Length: 129
Image (cartoon, rainbow, N blue to C red):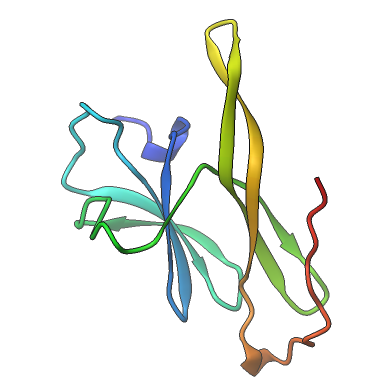
């Protein structure tokens, strides 16, 4: 049995937002053949529940769908809502022992709440550099 696709890091991930969920799906490296079935992470809105889901549609889905991200920095839960914090930009600095090292150059905090659950507009998330 092979390990799940999320067992190793990916250089790019496609983030797709819908009203009820956020999908994070790995993008195949150039030259790699990807299976017909892809395992994605699904985060339900507004519960913030995370689960693996399989899709028969291979990334990059449609070229104009979703946003390319470079990693998930965390899931931050507040008193009334939660946010998915993702890396949207990076700069390669070099290598250490054969592993690439990057500097974070952009991030985004994606609110996972919905207005129907009573989140105060004043409750926001600020990520400092």
